[in-house]
Amino acid sequence: MEKVPMTVRGAQQLREELERLLKQRPIISAAIGEARELGDLKENAEYHAAREEQGICEAQIRDIEYKLSVAQIIDVTQMENTGKIIFGTTVTLIDVDTDEEVRYQIVSEDEADIKTGRISVKSPIARGLIGKMEGDEVMISTPGGEKDFEIDKVEYI
Image (cartoon, rainbow, N blue to C red; front, side, top):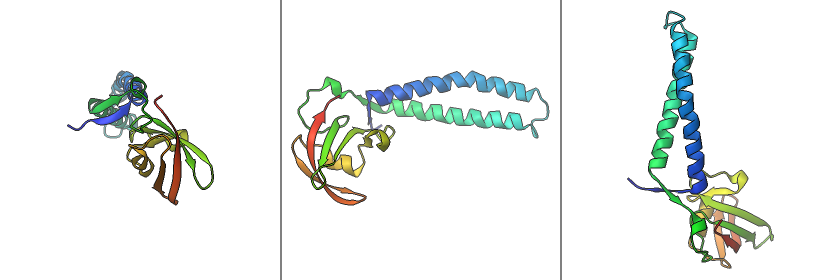
């Protein structure tokens, strides 16, 4: 089984979601029991809705448990800052053409959220940055075309 990198923050969020879902189990079971008491199960909308909710909940629990079982949790705060970009680091880039500054943290696919500055390790930008050093200039293929960036800062936070 191949391990999948995950940040400490991402693993914590998954554990919290798993805990929330596990607390839902008895509530859903009680709803199924109540709906079952209402009579004919073939035409009982409450029963079918509760069973569907139970199926979704159980699928989410299995998914999260699997993700946690294959996770290789990487805590970059415990690593020496060498200025090299690796999984989990936060990178500040300067667009060479426009002097615009952007900041990204390189995270797992499940944690990625461009609105909050977290990009997937499998994204074109992250793949172009991994292994580079603070101060390097790098050409990255983006959906908007080729962009030239200078790596301004690499943080292990």
